[in-house]
Image (cartoon, rainbow, N blue to C red; front, side):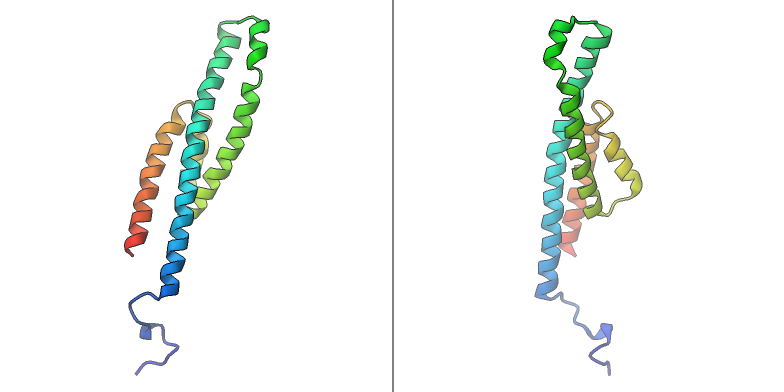
Length: 136
């Protein structure tokens, strides 16, 4: 006979509290994924705009009278990248991924076009993990 404190004596079905806790964690992960997706696209677009601005300035040597209208772009990208990093760390911690995944996600905001590619892969992996968590 098992004692009430014996963990093997617990029933196999999860309690309502356990199901509610799991749903709360899943909703938090889905929210983090949505925020990450938005910031990945915004950061990717701003990075491409920054590349164009730098090409205008250093490759095509565009006149300073014109360049004064785009001087805000590096600053905007910098602040957007900071927000992107916050969403990356948030999603990474909720999904409990490896440090290697974190590094790739961080680099996604600095390498042109990489944020779009990384976002696609991260989104697919996160959705798979969430679907798997729902079936447990």
